[in-house]
Each structure stands twice: as structure tokens, then as C-alpha cells.
Amino acid sequence: MKKTLALILTFIMVLALVPTVAFAAGNTIYVDAKNGNDDQDGVGTASDKAYKSLDKAMEAAVSGDTIMLGEGNYTLYGVSSTNTTKGKNLTFVGQGAEKTFWNIGAEVPDPANFGTEYNGDYSFDGAGTITFRNMTLRSGAADYLGFIRADKTIVENCTVNGKTFYWGYTSATFTKTTFNCPTGDYALWTYSSPMMTFDECTFNSSGKVINVYTDYGAGKHDITVNFKNCTVNNEEGTSKKPVLNINDSNMDKFKYVLNIAGDNKVNGVDVDNITGSSLFGFGGKEDNNAGKTVVKIDDTTVWQDGNHATGTLTVKKTVTGLPNEILPESFTFEIKQGENTQTVMANREGNDNTYKSETVRLPYGTYTINEVDADVNGFNLNPTGLGEVTIDKEHKEVTVNVTNAYEQLPPNTGTLTVKKTVSGGGADYNKAFKFTVKLEENGDTHNDKVTYGGVTFINGVATFTLKHNESKTIKGIPAGMTYTVTESDNAGYTVTMSGNTGTIEAGETSTAAFNNYKAGDSGHSHYYPTTTPVPVIVIPPKTGDMTIWQSILHFLGIR
Image 1 (cartoon, rainbow, N blue to C red):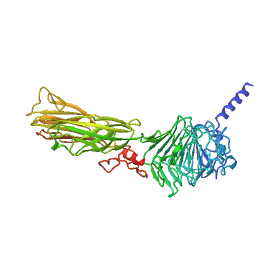
Image 2 (cartoon, rainbow, N blue to C red; image 1 turned 45 degrees about the vertical axis):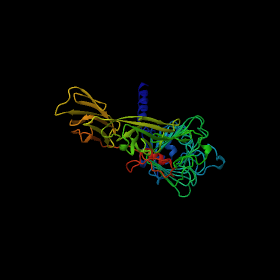
Image 3 (tube, rainbow, N blue to C red; image 1 turned 45 degrees about the horizontal axis):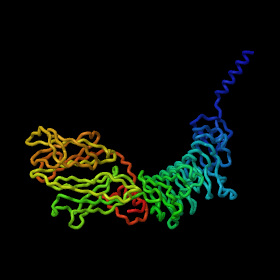
Image 4 (cartoon, helix red, strand yellow; image 1 turned 60 degrees about the vertical axis):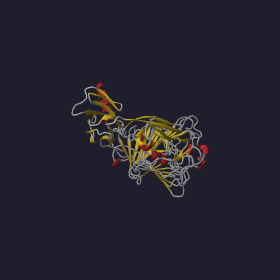
């Protein structure tokens, strides 16, 4: 009896080790709608042992599996998600958009279900993350189509034909995907996904593209749309709506947040008469603009509270201490925010000692106002009114009042200016570099403490730091003194310098210029939209390239 029992137990253990059709997580399962065979040994384990029926493969699949689809047509419509996709993270990979096709929902939606979700596809009801790669996803032209109640959906390198409403209920991500919109209709609505991301996608349309609207999630949470490096090709003469057509009238205390970045190209889409942009707007309907939308371009807020998130800035300047006959005709100011700099000129008003710039329009934000080349030989400059200003909805029209008080310097003195720039995509434009200035007279330093132009020298040596586009001017240095300027804290940079040594000349300005270069990718994003500009004054930059701000304002239809 004991021998018989031992044999039975041994047989059971052997059976447990025999491979079955069940798959461990992370395996690849093969399905071939044309040449597969559900009844063969080792079914699904190789391309020549592929399943024929997708639903059979789903019964064998576990969370984390990848399903390789052969050429042909596939769908799970009408198949219950129970025991097939529910609770699973699955990846479906086709043979290319021209070879593998997936039908979303019924081939012909039931007219009796129009206007409801019941034409939708429940085959992933309760699924985790569902990923589609390298295939064409085919939907219809009716409303409320799509994959209902999947947690997350990811679509990569696919083509999507038709209109869809339902994608991931947590998030939906589309990368390098082409959308072919139904004639005169949207490719999709931001209906069920709190976050939708479009990265390097192409939209072929004839009037409408994306409807930023929901009734399902309205007033429940914010809905975010990320739109980066996309191309829209709208058939000429068919434009009806902006690319991202918004209706936020039912969002209650929540908002749509549109994050736009990269090089988006829009062709054949008219500008919206509310936003002045072809990329986002309200379809010309004032009632759709309830102030519940925030639009950001490269993390700069350009639309909020139902209006352009922009204001104006004007520089006014008064000069004291200079004889009338040597007053300059203009002064130059820089408006800086991070790495972005815009130049504005303040021109003299008549023969007076007052100056005023043209008005520039800028996105909401905090800016630093600096003056450039305001020094006058023989005079010490004490400016006031420069520094940071903020433009926001409470401060939409900002005037910066600057006073330049000049004081004549003693005779037989000169000036030293140290200028700092950095360049290259790998450079840190916010790094402070340390500078040391050494002054000598007849080869010796002064063995005491002395101040020239607000800079203190101890035993002939002064130190300070400068960032990109900053400078330090030291006035009142006795003529005949020699200077040496050195920089430190610049490891990893290629340093180019000029004028770093020399002799102070009476009534003259000596300039020591340092540039630090580091190669790399800067990661800037620029916009070149097709919009109709609104006549607002913006001073052009010194180079032929658009600044980020100008690109944003041009993108919005504002110059």
C-alpha cells in the first residue's frame, strides 16, 4: 500500500512539471489570424505555433504578457473581459499599420445605441494598462466609441481611423501615432481620461481635430492635455474649429490644463476669434469660455481666467548729473527671465532729460530689468528702479521708473568693466563664476583697503561673481594702474578671454570679456504657428531668431 501511494505521489509531481499552455508573466504569446491553430501543441509559444483566436490567447495570458499579432484583422469586441483581460496589463504588437488591424467596437455601430456608451467596446473593462504598438486601430464615426473602463491606455507608432471617446480612465498616451479624422468631425474627445498626452503625433483632418470637452468627468477633477511636437494637416478650406477646441462651461471648480511644448506645426486651420490661435480656442463661442482653462507653452502660462495671460511693460527713465549737451539719445534695457532676454530701447523725449520706451507685451511672470551700456566716461553711475517686476492679472500694465544719477569722477581716473557670457547647449546659464581683479601701481599692490566705484580692494585685490550676461563696472581707478582679471569655478568649460590684462587710461573704459563654452543639447522649444497677428508692439531681438516669448506671443496671434 505504501509503495502504491509513493508511486501516485511521484506521478503527480511529474505532471506538475510538464509544460502547459499557461504562460508566466512577461512572456510573449503569438497570434496569427490567418495561419494560426488553436489546437496545436505548444500553442502560442512561437510565431509558427500561433493561436488563431485572440480570445483563446487572452484566456491563457497573464498580466505583463506581450501578444504578437500577425497580419490580419483582430478584435475582442463582444468578448467578456472576465477571464480574458480584466486585471491584466497587456501589450499588443502588430506587424505595422498597413498589415495589422484592430477593430474598436462593432464594424457597424447599432443605431439604437447612438448617443449612449453602449456602442463602446467593453473588451478591456477592468483591465490595467493596455498598450497597442505598430498597427491600425479602426473605429467608426458615431459618438461614444472607444475602449470602456480600461485603467490606462498607451498607443505607440499606430494609425487611428475614425472617432473615439473612451480611452484610459486614468490616462491615455499617444506617441508617434497618426489620426485620420472622420470627414468634418473630431478624431477624439477628451472624454474619459483625466490626462491625455500626444507626443509626435500627426492629425489629418477636414474641419475638426480634438474636442476638449466631457460630460462624463466634468466638474469631478482637472483634465490635462499634453500636446508636444505634433503636426496638424487640415484640408484647405474646411477649417471649422481650432485644433484643441475647448468647452469648459460645465467644469465647475475644476479646469482644463493644456500643456503645449515643442515644435507644433498647424496647417490649414483658421485662428480662433477669441484666443487668436489656431491651436487652441473656443470655436468662436463665448459661452464655451467660462474661465476654466489654463494654457501653458513651455511651462509659461499664456491663457487663464478666460483671457490671455499677458500684460504690458514700459520703461521710463530720468537722468541727473549729466550736462545737456552729452545726454545720449537713447538707453538700452534688457528684460530677462531665466535664459530668455528681450531688448528694449528708451528714447529721449525732446531735449529733456527724460526717456521712454515703447510698450512690450509679455506673458505673466516675474522679470528682471537691467540696463546695458549706461556708463559715461568720466562719471560714476548710481541707478535706481532696476530689478524684478511681476506681470499678472492684478498687474497687467507695468511701468518701470528708472533714475540714472551721474556724478563726475576725479580727473586722471579710468574705468574697468568685466563682462561675462556663457554659450553652448551644455552650459549652466544660471551658474555664478568667481572673478578676481588685481590692481598694481609700478608693479606693487596697495597694502591697504581702498574702494573704487563701490568695489572694495584689499591689498590690491577684489573678488565678485558674475552670471551669464552680467557685468561689473569699477570706476575711479587711478590712471596708470595695471590690472589683471582671472576667473575660477569654471571646470569643464572652454574659456575665451580678451582684455583680461591692461593699463587704466584716464577718462577711458577698459573691458575684460570672458566667455565659457560647454557643448550639449539646450532643449529649447520654439513655436512657428500659422496665426494672424494682433497689432501689439514687441521689440525684435538683436538676432534673427525668435525668443521664446516672441514665439509664444506670435503663436497666440500677438506681436
